[in-house]
Amino acid sequence: MFSGTLSFLCMKEESRLQYLDLSNNLFSGRIPDCWSKNRQLSVIILENNNLSGVIPSSLGSVEQLQSLRLRNTSLYGEIPSSLQNCTELKLLDVGENKLTGVIPSWIGERLQSLIVLSLRSNEFHGDLPSTICQQQFLQVLDLSLNNISGIIPSCLNNLTAMTHLGSSNVMIQYFFEYADADYTGDSNSQFHFEGSANDHLLVMWKGVEQEYGKTLGLLKVIDLSCNKLSGEIPKEVAILQGLISLNLSRNILKGSIIREIGQLIALESLDLSANHLSGEIPKSLSRLSFLSVLDLSNNNLSGKIPLGTQMQSFNATSYSGNLGLCGAPLRTCPGDETPKPPNTINTKSITESDEESFEPLWFFTGMTAGFLIGFWGIFGSLLVNKSWRHRYFQMVNKSGDWIRLTVALNMAKLHRILRLRG
Image (cartoon, rainbow, N blue to C red; front, side, top):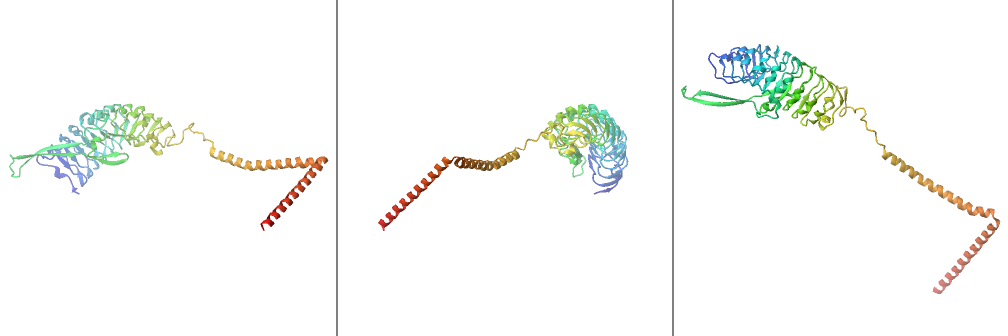
């Protein structure tokens, strides 16, 4: 890891340097204002150092500059207007500094080759210039964590690169050609060299800061979060069908979520939290099959959350802070309470147990009644009618005599058989 100042960059003669990467070191002091001798530079990376001061205006003399990355270097002041001469710029990242002023309108008017524009976490104020819509190649627009006010321009649908699905360039790549003398030192005999480099960028993706390099060209992101933007979300945003991340959270936006939000078919992350949005959640939102991050919390939304696999799969925190919202995964909406079915199992068991308890009761009751009727039907008649009583006892006596006689004859017969065998 290197330290010290960058004064050694001030060349006395024209430099053939094309790629400069001094990032992630401990360089301090100001960025020297002597870049006119480095006109062939295509890439300047000074991010993550202890630098201070303003962005030097002489950087505008590096007209072939394609990538300027000064992130996290404690710079202050305004973006120098001389940078509008760097019309080949594809990536401009001055995020996480203390830069002030308004966002220059010439960024949209002059830097029309930009693919990535990151001004995040600075102190920019004023309105978002409508000239930003002239960026036909822009795929990453990160203006989060500033003091930008006004409305979101309705001309965002002119960001042509974001209206198309996919990307023909997965990487943001730079190619270099240069000549050098041969090993003999003969300046008339030169070798020609070719080189290339892939750019990379830190992007806030799904709530986590991630570095993208080989797939940087696939990103299509708009992040305007943590500003003071007002007004409504322009319906023209729905034209940007290639968007995979849209973050408008922590502003003072009002109105409803645009009904056409479902046209953003590639969207994977949507954050509209902490605004003043009202009305119902559009049903079209439930058709976004790639949506994996959703945050609509802390608004004034109402009505029923649309039914759909995607919408019900999100945690309740995605919808919290909207007192008028109902439906899964939140509380049940009024009128949607389904009546509880009768407990047939318990009813059946009670009926069966009652029937089982009644069966022995009816059996013993019937048996008792039958016995009483039979007993009193016979013996009651004998008690009342004297002639019947007399005949009954005669029949009993005769039956007894017949039984005793039969038994005696059978016993005598049995004894005779036994004596014969003996």
